[in-house]
Image (cartoon, rainbow, N blue to C red; front, side, top):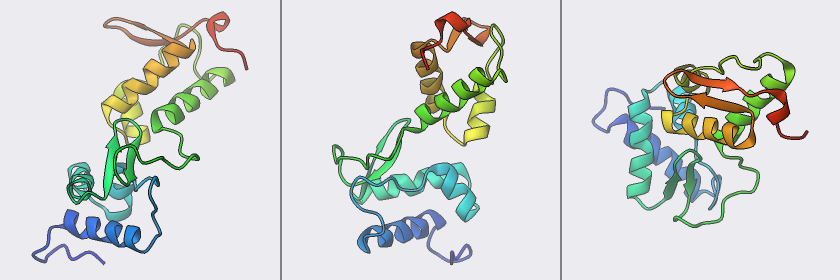
Length: 159
């Protein structure tokens, strides 16, 4: 239980909870620690507080962060759990499914950066990685100062 009125900052209390999970083996080297969005939801904290949790854990040498992918137990270079798909790839996969289903139509915009940031609870850099991934696969194209649109079907990757 968090003591929101006490002398220990909330981010330090949450970092201690995660440290205990690491010490007890609930989180092992390569495992992802809860994302900023998950921390916000679970503990009812602001995004900045969630970022401070990750920074505190990094400063203690318990975790490392890979931009657009998450924060992981261990030192940089520690092999990550194989079942962890980077969040930007998960976002891109969700959008490509919506394109295939026809929810997002050819030559029409995909959701804006802000909409995707809200929907997935991620940073702008993560959304930009997802959009770049969609472009690289052929699902989308970007028009400067206009937005990103669904590519014609003949440019889509094979099933």
